[in-house]
Image (cartoon, protein in one colour):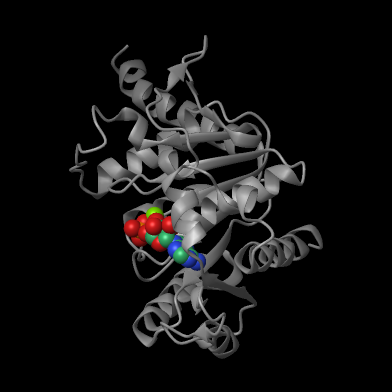
Amino acid sequence: MADNQSDKPVQIQEDQQKKLQKQLSRIRHTVMVMSGKGGVGKSTVTANLAVSLAREGYRVGVLDGDIHGPDIPKVLGVENMRLMGDEEGNILPVEAIGGIKVVSVGYLLDSPDTPVIWRGPMKHTVMRQFLKDVNWGDLDFLVVDLPPGTGDEPLSIAQLTKGVEGVETPCAVIVTTPQDVALLDSRKSVEFARALELKPLGIIENMSGFACPHCGESIDLFKTGGGRKASEDLGVPFLGAVPIDPAIVRDTDEGRPFVTSSGDTEAGKAFGKIVSKILEQIVSR
Ligand SMILES: Nc1ncnc2c1ncn2[C@@H]1O[C@H](COP(=O)(O)OP(=O)(O)OP(=O)(O)O)[C@@H](O)[C@H]1O
Ligand SMILES: [Mg+2]
C-alpha cells in the first residue's frame, strides 16, 4: 500500500510527460524567434511571419514566450481577451487573423500594466504548460516569440521541443539590427541555437536603412550590411534586410501585421522574400 502511494507522483509525472510528447507530436515545425538585443523587431517578425505562413495556407500557432513583455496580443490585434478551457480541461488559444492560434501570459494578467515577477523554475513551468496543456490541435508551424538573450524562456522552449519523434528539429530565426553591439549579441543567439541543437534558419537584419520620405535617399541610421557579414562569419543563411519604415510602427501599434496592409512597400517585399527563404529551407528538408 505504502509503495503504491509513493509510486503515484511518478505515475503522474510519466502521464504528463506522455501528454507533452503527444501534444508536441502534432506540431510539425517549431520556429523560435530570437535576438541578442531587445527592441530589434522580434515580435514584429513573429507576427508577420505567422500571418505570412497562414496566408500560404499553413496551420499556424503563436506562443508568446516573452513572459515579462508579452507584446503578441497587441501586435496581432487580439488584446483584451481571456483564455478559455475546453471540455477536457485544456486551454483554448485565442484566434487571430488567418485563424492563427495565440497563447500569451498577457491573457492571464489583470491589466496590461501588471508586471510578472517570476523566477526561472516558474517560467519553465509556464512554458511547459503552454506546450502541454494548450489545445493547439494540428499545426504546421508554431512560431515562438521570445525575450532578448539566451535566458530561461528560450532555454525552456528549446529543451522541451527537441527530440520529439516524428516532428522536425526545432528551428531558430535570429533578428538583429545592423550596429556592432546588436550584431555582437546576435552571434550569441546563433551559438545558443547550435548548442541546443536547434536548426539556425538564419539572420534577419531589421531596421536596415531608411528611405527619406522627402528626397527618397537612403539613410543608414544604424549602418547596413552587418547582418549579412555576421551570417557569413557564422556560416548561417542570411535571410534578408528589412528597412526602417514608419508604416511598420503605425501598423504594429494598431495591431495590424504590416504584411497585410503594407505588403507592397519595400519593407513588405523584403519580408516576403525572407518568408520564402525560410520556407525553402524547411520545405526542402
Ligand atoms: N523595420 C522596422 N521599421 C520601423 N519600425 C520597426 C521595424 N521593425 C520593428 N519596428 C518597431 O520597433 C519597435 C520594437 O519592435 P518589436 O517590439 O518587434 O521588438 P522586439 O525585439 O520584440 O522587442 P523586445 O525585445 O522588447 O521584445 C516596435 O514599435 C515596432 O513597431
Ligand atoms: Mg518582443
